[in-house]
Length: 177
Ligand SMILES: [Zn+2]
Image (cartoon, rainbow, N blue to C red; front, side, top):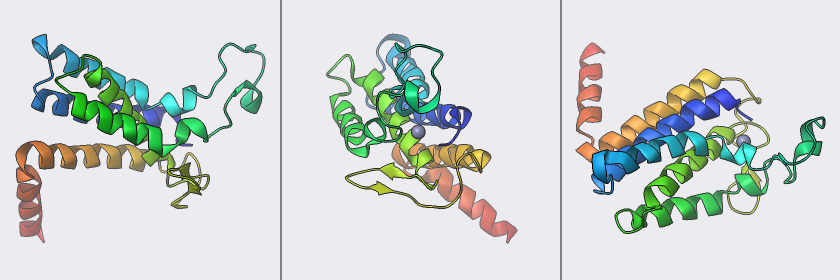
């Protein structure tokens, strides 16, 4: 797995994106409080697939696999429920009070799976585990963090400003070449 730190950093990126979308959907509530909740939920959701499988109620003396009640990278890393939660909470924005928090949490969770995807163990998106097999666990942490922020910035620009800033950036870059 990518380290906790990398998951945290990419979860925050997902949280920022979720918060922006909550604001856009007009579901921010008083002082955009729900948007802020979505941001924190994103950071929390970014590490969720890893801590949800830990049996915190078992003795602290046990380590590794013994402390897990769900086999590592199985149920909590399954793509279907995370994506369903993401879609369900998105369409509920503005009508259900829990939607912004759930949306941020799901955005963080999906981001977690994306960050785990390239390493050899892979992620069970649908039925079978799939890996992009690009690198070993724990390497390219910085790349994961940078990519996650870049992806969220692109998505935010595309969804909120019609890709205006991205277009400008590419035009500026092309003048350099
Ligand atoms: Zn993981």
